[in-house]
Amino acid sequence: MENNCAALDSVFHALADPTRRAVIQQLGKGSATVSELAKPFNMALPSFMKHIGVLEASGLIASRKIGRVRTCTLNPGKLSAAERWFGEQRALWESRYENLDNLLTELSGNER
Amino acid sequence: MENNCAALDSVFHALADPTRRAVIQQLGKGSATVSELAKPFNMALPSFMKHIGVLEASGLIASRKIGRVRTCTLNPGKLSAAERWFGEQRALWESRYENLDNLLTELSGNER
DNA sequence: GCAATTGTTTTCCATGTGGCTAACCATACC
DNA sequence: GGTATGGTTAGCCACATGGAAAACAATTGC
Figure 1 (tube, rainbow over the protein chains, first blue to last red):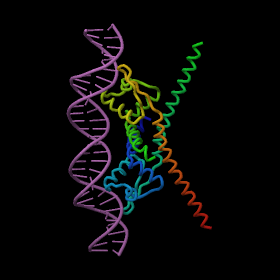
Figure 2: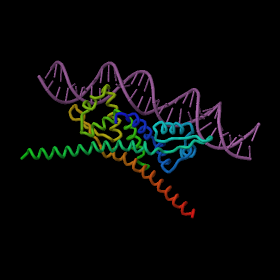
Figure 3: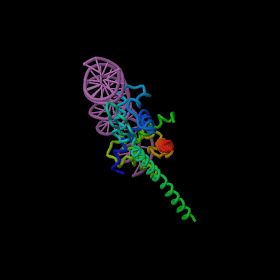
Figure 4: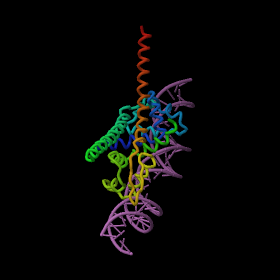
């Protein structure tokens, strides 16, 4: 878990932006070209491309240029890798409650 | 989903930092004071307090000051709210595959 | 009351981020 | 070949962020 630390940094940072989350969501429905993805946003292309760059750097999406058209694809693996982090945290949190439970049981045992 | 957009922004941004994720992880094991949390990090307190501030602004943690000691507590609800976003994305992604499957079935149906 | 502990406020700095325009390739198309 | 289309590069700007130092509360404990 120490190793994918930097990876989590970039993934979470990539997701901390409504534009980029919208792109992820759109790509969930299928691959698309840059200009298709950019259309819904009132934004200059170079600005939009930066978002694509951030998403690609994080590994959440991949892109390939054919001719003059760049097509983007979602990488669901990276997405579920980030999701896994939440699972780990919840496990920690839940085990804490187990421990608390044990402690309470123990205390009530000592009380008698 | 449109509404918690800003909330997701702040939560993901809060998680896009190893220090803050470590704090979350630590708090998963139980509440702790600011200086207890800060101890593992080679960082000046004011800097560390900024991280606490970011986490608290995102709603991931809460804190209460008693005397001169501030105690921080994890808010697992916010954590699982963020986790839910991944679930939604996966649902989208998976339904795409279903559709693809249907399409393929349909095509093979038309083939005969 | 004095000193140590625990945060907080203030100020500063370097860097990163998100946005823009303008100019520039490169490919498709007529 | 010339022109539209789809990206890209290069600069620029305002502002947020992560870090530090220093001075300042405010509480606890002797």
